[in-house]
Amino acid sequence: MAEDEMTQAENEISDAENVNEEAAAPVDETAHEIAHAHIPSDTTDVLGITLPFPIYTAVFVILAVLTVIEVVVGTGSSGAVIAIILAAIAFGKAYLVVSYYMHLRTDNRLFTYTLVFPLIVGILGILWLILVAPEAGGVE
Amino acid sequence: MAQLVETHGHTHDHESPQAKAENLKFAMWLYLASEVIIFSILIAAFAIFRVRQPEMVDEAREALSISFVSVNTFVLLASSWAMVMGLLAIQKGNNESMVRWIGLTGVLGLTFVLLQLVEYQELRHEGIALYSETAGRFGQRFYPLTAFHGAHVIVGVIWAFIVMFKGIKRQYSPTNYIGIEIFGLYWHFVDVVWIILFTMIYLI
Image (cartoon, rainbow over all chains, first blue to last red; front, side, top):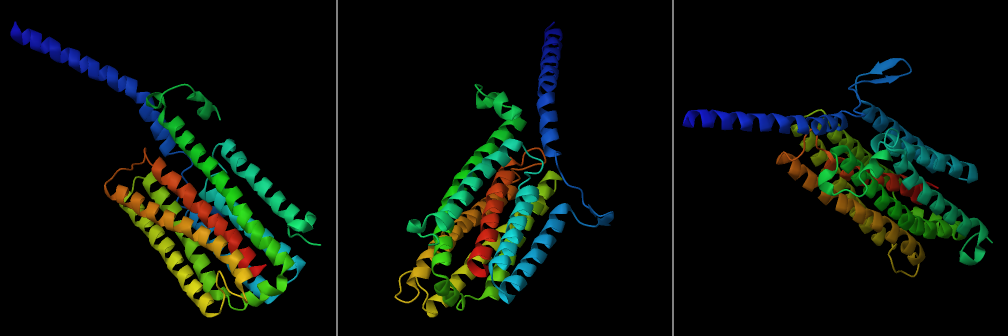
């Protein structure tokens, strides 16, 4: 009699565990989906050529090359056109980091808006101070 | 967006892991947005000085070593690469590799700070200080901007070693790495700011 009660209690516990596992399953699957979302492969395809390293390494090589180009161009000559070229390269590098390393290319669009809005305000503010407001230190 | 709205009105206990991760990332992006404005103000001060006093900036630049700072820039770019490789490692379940990459991130960040201190020492010997009669006006624009960025790097280095330590204690897994991802957002932002500062201060 006592053994029957024990067996029944064990079965109830076992059933309860099964229920818990079933309830937990969707959460685990969700976590699994997060973990494997947007994970780059070990190779990178560029113009039909497969490179033996992940996209992160390819981006780093591009950033390093662009930095060398910047230094060569920046130390070799000066002027408005050179300044615009250097600024364009710098923003290109920043775009690569933000898009690939900070995952804005694949993440929620709201994150992009969160970054872009203050960036536009900041850039317009700087340009206004330099170009429009001489009393604030801009061009006279 | 849907994930962010989904959890509105619920307690943290009822958040799905995905919604919690999205909310943490959004919070980090909001913080970074405020940083954009703060750095914009400091950059504006330098940019206006560059336009108004080009001869003073050109004179000060003769004391700045472009090659030295270029190496330091490369060090910071490499640290960003190490950071994201660490994230990739934990996503693939390789905790040991993640610890090594994040440790390298911290070491490279520390190297950047130390090299920046060396640069400051060199500039001081050249007479470029925060307060000096000759080049003080340049120093007042240069030091607050670069030192404020340097302070962010120091915070990032400490954070990197905390993440590394937690990694050693196996607190991350392929299904739980949001802590590393959040640190990565901060660290890459610091890198992006330097990309802009390097070009503006030393090249344009």
